[in-house]
Length: 293
Image (tube, rainbow, N blue to C red; front, side, top):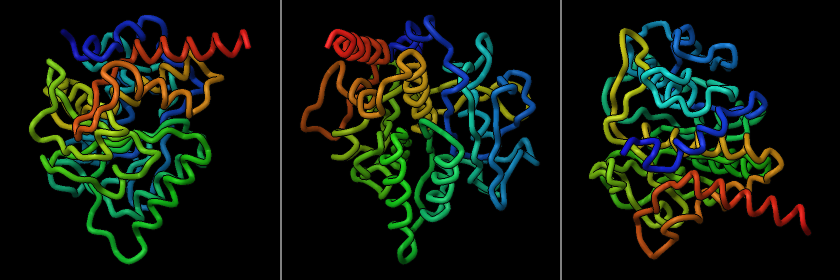
């Protein structure tokens, strides 16, 4: 089974490619914005103090940002999953191009908080965050918590990669009650051995394809990667398509539809597998109930 079919996205993608008024905030490395397979007419960039467009296409940060952008925003028919190219992508670079290759890029909590607020102010409805949290300084964890609280207050859904250290526990990012953490799974729907797990991840998170995912490379040709950074945009893309089909739905409705269908919740550190088509049916039922009320 394909990665898209495993999590019910193939059926949903047949219905829609997304709406231009649905904006996804991508907090990641800089993107190779001139890539011919990106839907560039709906790509916006918020430059940070140190990052904007890619200056070195071969850098780890540029490769990572372009790879994740491709999963969400590549043109249909490209090598990438291309989940929601009809939406608007708001890229907010956070990782320096000097970062070492390999592993999951990291950011200080204050930097991540600032990027979240930038995306909220620019009109994002859903955020995709693939970042390990570096050791926080005094008060920096509170800044991140406040920014995530702002996202909750504004009804902006936050999807985050759970991390690839193979540990059991949580971080200031994955334990926040508004966040939906995402674990990487293989093509049989089993969590990969490098994915972080934990109580908060099991209670509120989801699993999505994260093993040998092929998307856009920032230099020459496609790029194949594994990990929770590859898995998170499958969930973010599902949110974007669901909201595109049900634009009047509240953030609470979308989160409920996203996290409740399928296997349900048990007392486990392993979250259930994303089922985007079941979520679509749940939202359809909610919408129908309100029309007849």
